[in-house]
View (cartoon, each protein chain N blue to C red):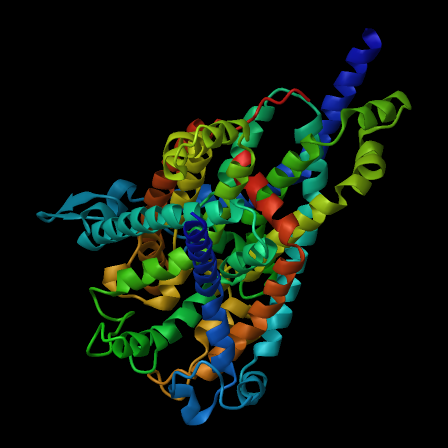
Length: 306
Length: 277
């Protein structure tokens, strides 16, 4: 008995030795920058002189001065970017979930060439976001774009539309490209869940002659719902921090400005590190809340009987 | 009855065809566009009138694009090597040894892997500058660790949990130290997992945009995504679409080939990282 407990102690010591390089690196590249960003959000730091910043409390967030409210929380543009981010996240994740389910169900049935189709579905996922933004902005080009050409030919529109520049269309274009790019990921997660389902329920339903649509809503959907919820929250968090697609596709138009775009604009273009950090910290708090939700809903296996 | 079954099969294959078309067409059209030049570029033909490599020539002659590819390769490879190196021992500890504080560590690592990059941008900028790495590839390698390292550790941990217990017990009986177990017993079994994880981390680093855009300044230090985003024409209103599409094809085709070759591994890595948790 004394031997095993000594062995156990040795192993626990080895564990911490093994973990040290990783923890050290993570503290340097994650914890420290996060703490510094939150720290900057309480200062008047400027990009040109970040070192001699003065602490100004919550003034970057919200302050009442000379008869007016100032700070991120008093900026209508911030609230517009919050609205845009939520609108983007809810609509695109919603569409992706439905399309992802359809694609997953198709890939779950066995048919010839299934491997080829699954490979084809992975293609949008493999394309870098910046590249897919460029590919689509070419297809959505107002003068020479294929999309306008096809729609005019089909008689659905009379004049070419400026998909990425028009205020009412820009967000739709962003959502369309994001759906194209991330549906494969959703489909694969749902497919993995479908493949883990017991086949007995289906057998029973088939023998009883129940209509496939009914089987889907009564059997399949309830069974994959936990996995589906995890995938939805996972994608939702990803959508909340969207930056590169919007930066490349529609640049700095207010109609598609998201929280990340807003924060970066203040940080880099206006060089207001303190103010931009405050916006970044607010975004962090929103995402952190979602991470908490994810951990609860996902009921991540943490205690394993190893 | 027979006719209805046939109709259903036709509808099913039509849906399959639609899915494939939707997924692949934008890449196909980018390839077609990259072969067009002059006025052909502005006609929506779905097949190029003739295969013209002019855009590819212009891409490598007029822009420092070859340099950007080399930069991206250096950055992504270094990030993957460091992450795997640090990640293997850490995930062994997390997967095979039970100790106090392990659940908390796992939650923290999962949380960090979901950090929005913008939330650390100003702190990271300060760190990169303090280390003297602003506008260098070193700065990108350091900053990319924030998303590749937790991802690598998480996925490797889930893979390592599934290795048979007996192997390890036999090694312990023989008096092997934990280090020997990792390097001699587990490493040979872990190669498939390392390939999968490394590939996914490589793709993540290859595609990263925000840090690369913010922490590099000069053309010689740019990575591929930033280089493509910044390709500009003679005037701000005339983007050289043929060249942009050629650049897109050059950086995408190797990735697509990789993904098709390692399809099964990638799918298992992706789903293990997110659903199984």
